[in-house]
Length: 386
Image 1 (cartoon, rainbow, N blue to C red):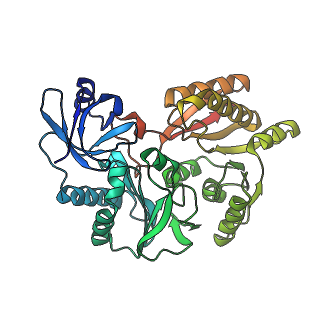
Image 2 (cartoon, one colour):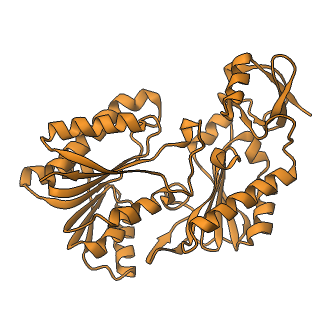
Image 3 (tube, rainbow, N blue to C red):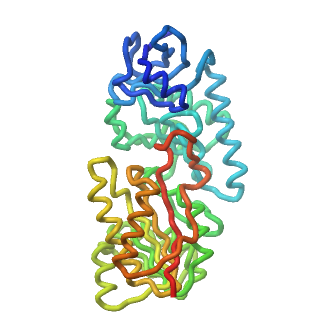
């Protein structure tokens, strides 16, 4: 079996439960990129099996520890366990995450379900090499109508992998209708954000509905997920997204669900928040769900300024007693930093706020304890005091 020897620091990472070993902690390599390798410690002891990459800074992604081997029975068992876990989490949903990479002990593998279809992403050399075997197992376990390999994320370039979108089993239509607790969406699995929908906010949309009332502003709306869910509790919903295509989807989704009190328009959210402030507009419920402002450490400072600006202006136009649901999906802005940003925004807005709920990505996107990289989505529910 191919082998990779690692440093004492790398061995300590494994002992601490982290599945990633960086290139700086790799010594001797007797393997090719994409191999499943036996990981050897500095004293010659076997530490487990891992996926090896000869291009990424993440050289090893651990699959097993100790003497356990990564054979087909392991792949099948972990896929079956992931599927069974989601079945108890989302018995009434038709769209959710089935496999969440490291958090399901299947590093760099994403599988999302949209009705009768699956969308898969293989984001490392090792997982990409095994895509045919993974698809075969998924078909045996779930019997989908089709499987789409949505392998267009830029992170694949770090592994020396091409970006592509292709059907790997059956047929996959250009649009799939799904149901999220009574709200119907048309999802584009071929070109939509992520694998078609922001599934990680599904439970947060439901939670936000518990607080919604009056005039609702859904900013960075994408396909209107929050706005559509909150509309039943609102007098009116204003959905804003910079993309004309997104606005078209929001409008179509509202019509499909018979929602008449939601209007959508294409605009820059930063500009619109300033406009609302100048004109004295007020909202009773505001949702801020922007894209990741900090995709790497170098962009954190700029991201802090962006998050502070939108939260400050949102608080200025939020009615006393109103609710702000504010989110960050930037892993590099952790929960403590995000709370500090919101605090500073409240100070500048001269607003007293209470933290009602701290939420995160949905339970179908679990966090692996000891691996902070798997905790990326922060969602705060705040109340502006009277």
